[in-house]
Image (cartoon, one colour):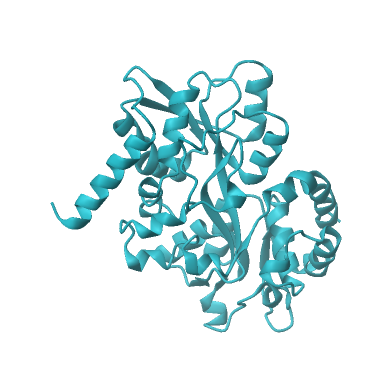
Amino acid sequence: MNRTTSFRTLAIAGLIASVAVPAVAADTITVASWGGTYQEAQTKAFFKPTADALGITIKEDTTNGLDDVRLQVTGNAVKWDITELGADECARGSKEGLFEKLDYGIIDKSGINPKLVHDDWVGISYTSVVLIYRTDVFGDKGPKTWADFWNVEKFPGRRALSSSQATETLSVAALASGLPIDKVYPVDIDGALKSVDKIRGHVDAWWTSGAQAMQLVKDGEVDMASIWNGRAGTLKKEGAPVSFSFDQGVLTADCMVIPKGAKNKDAAMKALAMFVSPQLQANLPLYVDNGPVNEKAFETGKIPPERIKDINSAPENVKKQVLQDAAFWRDNLVEATEKFNNLIQQ
């Protein structure tokens, strides 16, 4: 056994010890996530290693978000022990009292951004909104900032932005207005809407899903777009003539919760502790482009150095991006989304 392997083995052993005694073999928990390639990656990165280490069974389901959790909790019919949500949903659900309190005596929160550590929810992974452009149109002189994207004279071409993710589009609109990344939050909603108003007449496509955004760029229907980094990375891997970076990216977190009234709360707490541990977090970017939420994952030695530069939550890339403020959107999402939708539908 080499030194690295020995270290990793000891780390896993220590982690298992830290979550107290393993749950009895009869314990079964159900975890709900988003399905698709992402959940397949989570199965390999989090769920199977945790089930093996704790001697439990992890069943999987898929979720459509906070409405599903609310329906289960208010109907006294909770079927999930852990579920994934967007951070803004976690903030809203917490305010509604829909989640169990988390035990940070079991869950080690060190290495996780304090903005993503709360009494009843914790971050699990990151996605980024980035600016992508086609190099067969612009060469290496394409738009590099959101101000460039908004500059239709200097960078003529067909554009796409998200209509389904108002929080993301308003964030990039704030950046386009000239705000530095550390001044975007709290978002000046009216100011961001004015910025959207300046570009909306030049937007050729408003996308509503990651797959649609990717297809628009892939087929050359648009020359530049906002897009999730995982979709942008797939285009690069497929050989599409595109370029993107994490400069002025908008970093959005997903989180995990234990729904109020979960039947297997104790086993779920131990499993969640494993999911957010550095050793298992480091597994995630080996399978998918969502970044680890625990920065200590980058210290485990499990992620190849050449891979780290392409991960959105790598320390050097985090510095270039805006982290969405879940508490801000908890309080402002409904009003902002209504105003945004009314504007782009004019």
